[in-house]
Length: 134
Image (cartoon, rainbow, N blue to C red; front, top):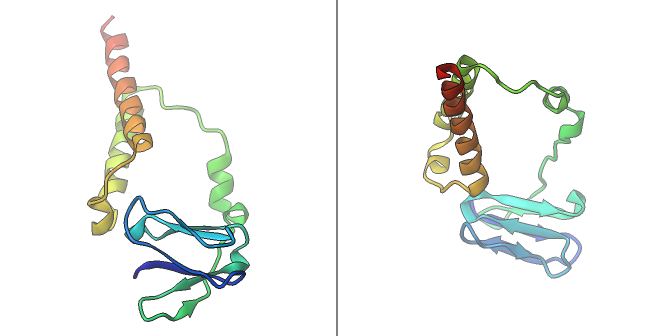
């Protein structure tokens, strides 16, 4: 499916063709981004329609994550991992989550936020090794 949308306010049909292609409708109400990644934004989701490859307009189902129980759990403060075992478990969990990604996601490039998160984790693991040696 193409990353294509229609704005109900200005009636513009916009499409993002590649990963760095950010497109805004003429009134600035909606945008699409990321080509095949299908990223999109809207000031008011009532004005956003997804457009499929045949030109059919699709009303998206918007899920408010602020109401979900999992969001409450993730917003609670969690103690950072401190032992080498906990850090290695965290690294294993990251690997398992990446391996579960769909094939198209496995071939897309990572961003600097992803990369720095991995480096921080690896640095913490190596620092715990240094503390144990001294």
